[in-house]
Length: 99
Image 1: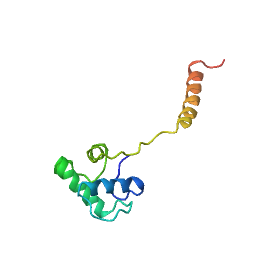
Image 2 (image 1 turned 60 degrees about the vertical axis):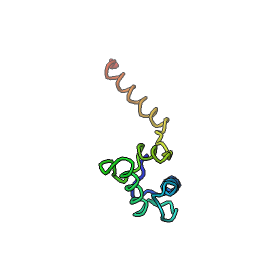
Image 3 (image 1 turned 135 degrees about the vertical axis):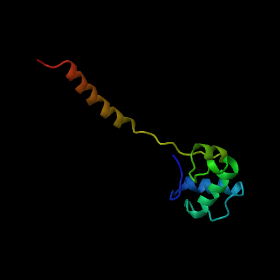
Image 4 (image 1 turned 120 degrees about the vertical axis):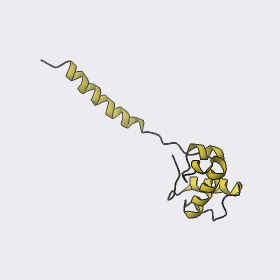
């Protein structure tokens, strides 16, 4: 998961808290990745990674530098099983046609 302008929720609140701890964020802790959070992220990235490493998106590198845990996205396992079984069945029929 990546956080960017427009993101909302508890993880954005944690981001704002981490940025505040490091003296990069002075706005309200409002769970909204708005203009103030974006500027704080860009300033943090420029300080830690240089201007070339500043994109305003909080991915793994920025999260690690902030000691922030980003939630992972998990695939729904049963959905994968539903897709793979019919495919295997069709493949089997193509190679072993019923006569």
